[in-house]
Image (cartoon, rainbow, N blue to C red):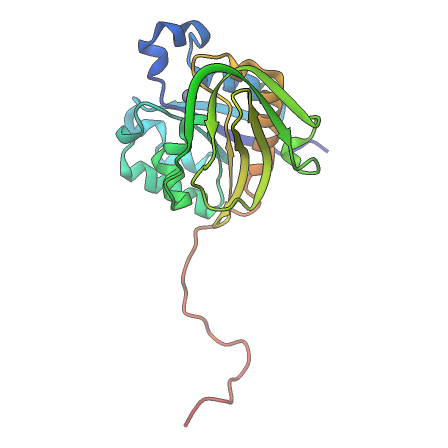
Length: 247
Ligand code: ZN
């Protein structure tokens, strides 16, 4: 039986690629274009992109309503994301839309809003080696990934990462300089599945990496909504006759 189509929106701030030649060289059409291409190669995924400088950041009610899973990459312009759009995305996640937050998206308004903590970390840009350990081999997100995979040149992110304790720990990174980091984490917020995935610094071709792409494909399928329904707070009629009402 054919799998149902999952509607994916890849959101990218899309600023570094316009102004930094080093980033343009790695992602001439934007980080979102590379991620979208990798996802669109899967027959069960239908993919669109949205960027910060579009009206409403490309995330209108109509776009979000037709999005099963939203991916989010941002870094230098988190503060330019309108609070109204952040609230709109939050409401869709609580209703059931999946959200995958990438790399420097740890400081995005939407991630901090959903986590309720600072989401701070240590960082260093030395182009060092990273080894991502698969600590949840039975999880849908790690299927096809071995015990670990490596990225030859990355920005370091180090603990403490000030997130709420994840519902599931998926990857833990080790860096050549000695630090470790919780690089893959899941949470449920309302009906929505949230996955944070660390790799993706803009000056390295990390979204071209086959393992990274495999994780993203797996994560999209994992994060798809099983129920899409806004949360309500209704007064409830009893199912049975209540006989113990006080006099
Ligand atoms: Zn970075």
